[in-house]
Amino acid sequence: MQGQATKQFRTLFISDVHLGSRAAKADFLIDFLRHHEAETIFLVGDIVDGWRLRRSWHWPQTHNDVVQKLLRQARKGTSITYLAGNHDEFLRMFQGTHFGGIVVADRAVHIAADGKRYLVIHGDQFDTVVMNVRWLAYLGDRAYEFAMLTNRLVARVRRGMGLPYWSFSSWAKIKVKQAVNFIGAFQDVLTEEARRSDVDGVICGHIHHAAIETFGDVRYINTGDWVESCTAVVEHFDGTMEIIHWPYIRATPSLSPDRLVPVTIDARLIERSVEAA
Image (cartoon, rainbow, N blue to C red; front, side, top):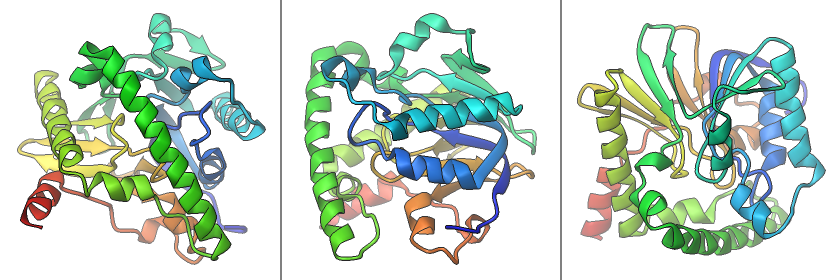
């Protein structure tokens, strides 16, 4: 990616970085931020993984570099809002507080260049397992950690073979019917929350599944994550929203972000395909 010009956007939406966990692709995110700048950045939750850090401390220099990169952008005038998620829920005690120019919130409304209003929220507030059965959420987190270990082993083998990054866990997710059902249910409940909030769409994270979908009169946008797929959502200056899959671009230096087709994955279509298999 050396020599590629920095792309300018109106807004960047990034979630689920999980700094403090071994699964975080901090080097990918630093590279992404080096090539993408925006007037406004929304950090849509789970940027820091408090759950992992409570179990064991893991904070390499690359994780610190991500924080420093964001703080530098805030000092240069970028408006940055940090929306707390379930893994960094300790920040919900500090809503409205500024840390180095980054403001903390639980939810926000973003008005896009085309006038559409989006509710921006992590989404864990509407995950019944996270909210009501905490022990099961922590158990699931341990299982997910095992999946991330498998991810790292697969990535190491692929690097040795000269192949680009590929996420085993993302692939497995769309192969498991229960996961597909959960994704569909999550989309439904976030869409309903957008309607209750009287906005045109919702931008969220939490489930590590990037998507841009339209459900009736509501636009559903999920930013994905930076432990599996390494995706972000960008808003162009005309209000167009797009998913950028950074490993794909990183592995193809001649391909610039403005030539990509937005990624849209309909969980219901995947579900029907799995049922038919």
